Length: 466
Ligand SMILES: Cc1cc2nc3c(=O)[nH]c(=O)nc-3n(C[C@H](O)[C@H](O)[C@H](O)COP(=O)(O)OP(=O)(O)OC[C@H]3O[C@@H](n4cnc5c(N)ncnc54)[C@H](O)[C@@H]3O)c2cc1C
Ligand code: FES
Ligand code: FES
Image 1: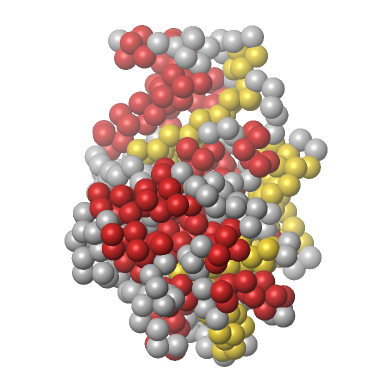
Image 2: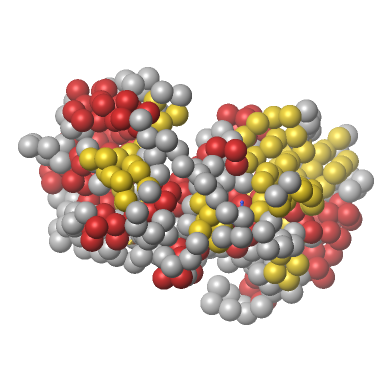
């Protein structure tokens, strides 16, 4: 049985755990407020909130219900547009009306849920963050200016929010119905249920699988990793950071440990999908889908990450760069799963950069992406790793380029020579994201961008391009 709270009602269901939460809400519970648009995580019409009990607090985030396997709702509070309706419009709903942010209304429940989720976060609201909260919502008719104005006016109201207890503040200020105050106690009564069977189809956040083969998942025996606390979380151990394989992209970008070593992590991760997809998609899901342009794969390849692969009581540790064998072929046997990701860390003289070019800046997959890490000691490069996506059948660790750079003094000449070696290591193909020549040129520019950003005193753009 799957047990969770849907708005103010406790649900106990024996529906298949691979059914989409969206279908369960609309057809199982007859609540049509959550809309069906693309069913691919792109439009946000199906956005709902997911509340999780953590350290006696309920923490809410936006998710897309079209890609959420019902089993991932176990032990959660799921909130749909019906669950925030009250006698009067909430300030979020009111701002959409007052600013003419709605026309046909199809997208409106999704926008309202994303902006309500923004209000529930334990962060001070800013205009920028309110806009980021709706990064996964698309409107076909209103035009975004009026919706942006609504977001700005909501953000002004939320500036008064008590960030130590947003739920209470949101209820007191009529953003939410009163039943929200009792959800924490109700969730304590629901056990988390993570019984698993090793040979079943693993699902993390579902943001890849539920797009690729939703019908199959509805009929397959599945192994849900999304709520497995033993596979979640980020910790420091000696000279490494250990990341659980079911940790989401949002959890990585908001982690204090990660932020300590990667000051630009939020800027980098904002280029990856949208807020709800980052809230769902896991690090291992990104590695195992093995897309040649997977952003997390490229990011962690340049960090020289290792992964621990488990099967029953056995485990093996391999470098991530050896995990990708050929197009969509990985070093993972039946019954095995990724348990953790390990990155070596060092604060002293450590430099890291990630670059991504896509047709749209946000909510788009890369045409080409690249990352680099190295230490710079007395102007000499040490421990260098470079990676690139979209230029090979796999997310590519650029071994020869990395090896060439190690021990070299940083200079325009070094970077130009390395960029020529890099061109010999890649084999981009012409496809919808650009011609082979275009991708070669893009990667060269991204490679230069790494050094211009990280070593601006020693590197001159004019010299590199002359
Ligand atoms: C709208 C949209 C936008 C996106 N944008 C981007 C983007 O900008 N950049 C990007 O890189 N990706 C993007 N993605 C792809 C996807 O979100 C990510 O790859 C995500 O990290 C997948 O993680 P998941 O947990 O949701 O995977 P799932 O769909 O749950 O699983 C994917 C695969 O991984 C396997 N798996 C999951 N966990 C484990 C484990 N621990 N051990 C072994 N196997 C495991 C599953 O069996 C499955 O084969 C986007 C997806 C959508 C829908
Ligand atoms: S229906 Fe479009 S994101 Fe879910
Ligand atoms: S109001 Fe029609 S899609 Fe947004």
